[in-house]
Amino acid sequence: MTGPRYAFFDDYPLERGHHPDLAVGLALAASAPLYCPPSFLDGRPEARSLRHTPTIASPDQHLEETRRNLDRSIEDAASLSSDTFVNLFFDENWDSFPVSRRGLRHVQALHRPGELTGTLGGINAIKRADPLAVVNALARTDLFVVHTPVGEQQARAWLPADRVLRAGWPTATEAEIRRRIVLGRHRGENPYVLLVGEALDYKGIDVLVEAVDPGPLLRIAGNLTYPGPDWLAAQHPGARVQWEPGWVARDRMSELVAGASVVVFPYHDGFQKHGGVSGALVNAMTFGKPLVISEALAGQVPQSPACQVVPCGDVHELRRAIDHAMKNTADLHQAAGDLTDYLLRQHTYEGHLDRIAERLDELNRPARAADASDRRG
Image 1 (cartoon, rainbow, N blue to C red):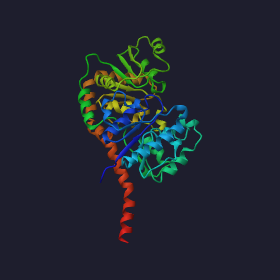
Image 2 (image 1 turned 60 degrees about the vertical axis):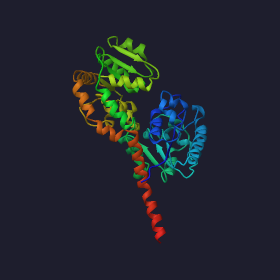
Image 3 (image 1 turned 30 degrees about the horizontal axis):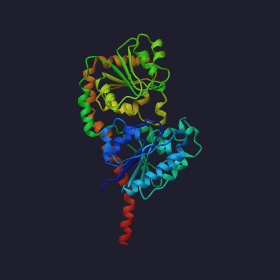
Image 4 (image 1 turned 180 degrees about the horizontal axis):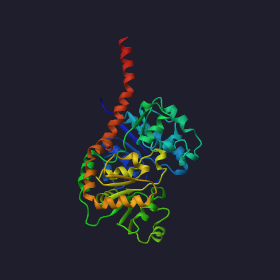
């Protein structure tokens, strides 16, 4: 089987994008053209080797600008002999369809299938078009990629089963994961609990700070929004918290994850309803880290002593799990390292591309068989 000649697109309008590492990582792994805002490449010097075409869309003009960006990118990809165009954020740009196809196969990535109709809120709650009409029109030709079991179930409610591919969130190359597992075994002298990503309310920041008041050092790396560090410090004066607010560079984030004793994701109930994935959780797993997660994320990790699951919003159980992780660091790191084969199967850029290629080949077999039959006839 000859592999696809990919091209990747994402013009998410906010400065840092949604998951820039997804776009850049896949394009690098496939040696494929990438159409995205220039800011996606910040802190990624290796991305200079890519054929990158900037696409810029403002939030208030996203519909019209994205339609133009898609049309121009598809035309350019076809001129470069790409044969498979991957739209990496269909959730945000479905209302720009229909767009030109230029004879390419099209793959649509769905990050949060449950929000597509707007019934769970989010950006699609205010869009005027009919997303399912767009999906049903594309389902005759396109492949839709989701990342979680819940997302797969949701997408299959609208789409034929063979048009839905569940593939784990890709977060690193195979070589990177092997290096990360080794790096994650060497912890610093000062043990700490880590929360990565934006410290948002729905991610359980309030529950986590209460759980470590008093307790082990908690480091938080990412943007801080409501309720904010001052409010949390006033509410929980016994918590030892070190904040690294703002955008945390990829290398710095890797350093923080690799040095942590345990990485915690105490998301509140409801996150799982949209079928989306926690990219930060997957990233932490690839460092061979013990994890403490809430039940909202339980479907996104394998069964392992390294992945402790606690009830959403339960401060007592969260503290118990954190204490267990801090007291059994060596054993839990060993258990996390034992997940290496799972991570290589589920969460590499190369594996993700292979999964897409395999499904596209399966979808093309009936057409090839029909062509062969016509030739024989």
